[in-house]
Length: 88
Image 1 (cartoon, helix red, strand yellow):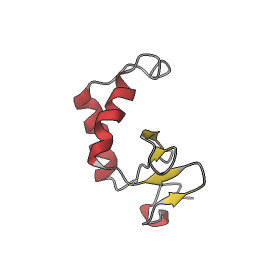
Image 2 (cartoon, helix red, strand yellow; image 1 turned 120 degrees about the vertical axis):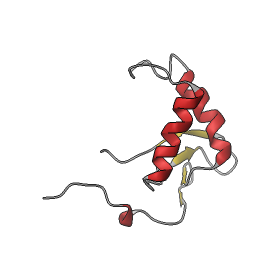
Image 3 (tube, helix red, strand yellow; image 1 turned 90 degrees about the horizontal axis):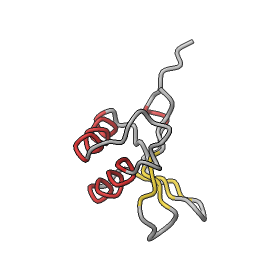
Image 4 (cartoon, helix red, strand yellow; image 1 turned 60 degrees about the vertical axis):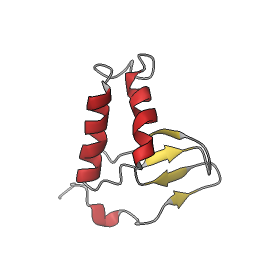
């Protein structure tokens, strides 16, 4: 059985619930996402923190793979809160 991820299963529109928004990456997500990746406490279970360039490259790979690698936010005007991506 092929367990590879298919982007065909991803919706083209945003996914909204009363408390969460999953959407495509926007350029204005790069700075807050880099701040999360540079925070020692946030990244304590990861091998290391990421530089701004490394964080931007990660988003670039997500965009290139068309993973929708959803940026998450707490709602309509809430800031970007992280990333949700399918297991590889």
